[in-house]
Image 1: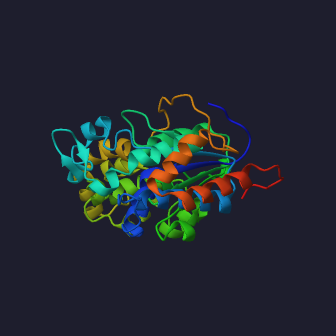
Image 2: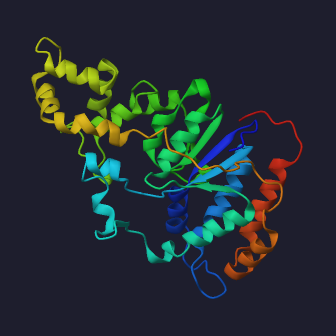
Image 3: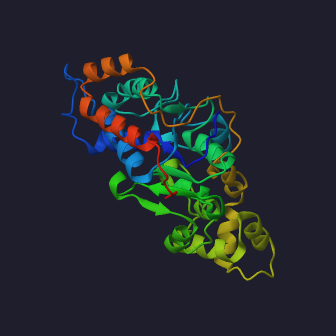
Length: 316
């Protein structure tokens, strides 16, 4: 994997194409009437992010396994409510979006933009591994708060949080995490473990909402110290909180390994640099014509040309 100097941008690709699919009317279609709102939306997002944030490198990170076995073995309810077919383990994805995902990958290939997914791991884990290995700075683009655990001011790892839209994203660093949740900036994973997340099938500790979870993390530092306090009759935990923590001991024994983004994914070799020109102009032209992607492809090419032109830009 080549590592030239400059900012690395990591895309939580599914987060972005889901946002595009649900945020852009499905009347955006190819000449044959096939919806391409997710394809065009993702391309427009990439163009805007490159233009606004000036990365030198970019990787579209993918869910090769959206519900990895190592997480399900620890907590069987992990994302269980989102399984569409229990025989195959397929995720519930609208058919009109699912059909667009291969097109997205073909267009990224033709452009020469790296996309990486690793069997057995989620995109979050690919992102975590790349962010950990890189010298920085690193911008992670996502609408998923789970990735807040990656912020690292010392290494320049921050989140471009797209919950309000790609054009209105928030820049999340350690101070932003502390301001939002009242916790140390690097403590988000323990906070999230205590609070739980019904959307991911994580129960959390009964009664531990944001305020209680923040108080416990700020006072005790991590889950290990918190459980030690629960086991210590002389600690200053209230009887109610102590009981709830002890009742949740089995969950707390495994949940940190489910919530934690992995940083040890065996990555394939790839080039992450932004291309000055398409990797396969003929294929890109054919895809653009077939799927009616002209203006969106043009915006990406314009953004890439500007980003790779010789210039002296300071990191954002």
